[in-house]
Image (cartoon, rainbow, N blue to C red):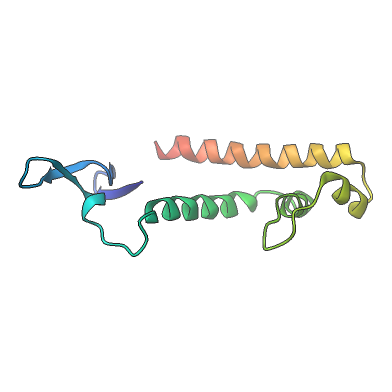
Length: 120
């Protein structure tokens, strides 16, 4: 996890990076001084960031792809559904559902990679 240290230089710094030393000489990090009610808050933030990115990349899919991914992975508090059940519901073959699902996930992955490369 990173926070912005300098808006002019856009230099990212890890919250685990050393910020100084305790009186006993051991290193202190930003993470050490954060107070939070949940000890695993960093994982929660990371998970929420991933969910936000997924929602953003989800928008690049067409409506059929969105429908299949939503059903397949149980998004929006829906029950997870098999490819066979989706195929029956949409009156298409299971293999076609599989191809649409793969294409949609590939689109989302490409968008992720493109945005990751642009941010580096």
